[in-house]
Length: 381
Length: 49
Image (cartoon, rainbow over all chains, first blue to last red; front, side, top):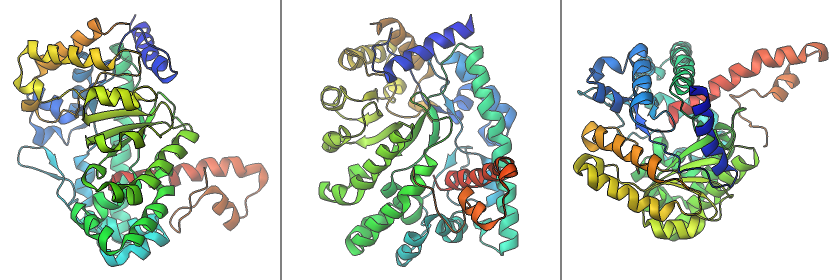
């Protein structure tokens, strides 16, 4: 019975990915596992360490939130960060894992990055982001080994558990095979920082261009797995473009980003882009990407997005998650109807909220469930 | 897809170049070396994503 339901839900996504109109609009809700912990009322300061609690939260999310795909994601692992002495991911007093703005690379180091990005990451960046790696070579090797063992121990249980509960509750298979990052975002995010890269494109523009080109093969490699497919995609959160002038975007961001998406698609690993902030200025660029790229938008005019990129690509997102926190149930459902009426005609649409749910106060779970149930009933073709 | 190159990453062709790999055991050696190379790469990327 549940296996049949999983198969039916898988088919919704397969139809989309193969250019057909599915029976109904699929619903894919994204939430950090810490959102489920808050919903369950468990102590985050303990639960973030505890594999068994995480597994319970994954199951609770599968049976509660009416998503067609397991909604809970586990992306941050405290035991690993603890071994490494992470300064880029730290637990706040509430138990939420926070991400301070850290500089992992200095501007005079571009040539080293360009020469061998993977080596540079190990030699220079990691010891700055993870203070327990800033030590003698022997100690560093031991710390790295322990952390990688912990990472593998956790994920070797979490991923099979997600697959198991998805089958148990009749959900579709996961939509994400792996993650990578746009080359310019990679240089910005944990290497040079937002302010650092913004200064670098004025002071060392050619070095930034060279760095993005040098990093591209590493980002392509990160984004292709043996199990990649149109249903198991490469997740890419996009960060910096909306904060750049259009001519800077054209010079620094777009060339290697486009190559990345094209090379992933050619390798059988189509992208699922999380188009963060407002990309209205760049919709024509996005439309140039390989057909069938999935784009989960945060902000923008749904009609314009549907018109400009919705014929060639799969659209999701755009539903304001925070409405679930402050709106009435009817207001939330009305908003869902408004978006479905714009985005569903002709297919190429997955219903998602505009953000990953992290804080319980941002998204009332009852409203979330009501909206997802509404879409599954209403958005039939 | 071009083969990824780095001083800190040993691709299978790098491995074969630097070691005396017999043809009749190559498949076994590859399956016992490359997954660990890939695991280290994947973990490294997780640390900077």
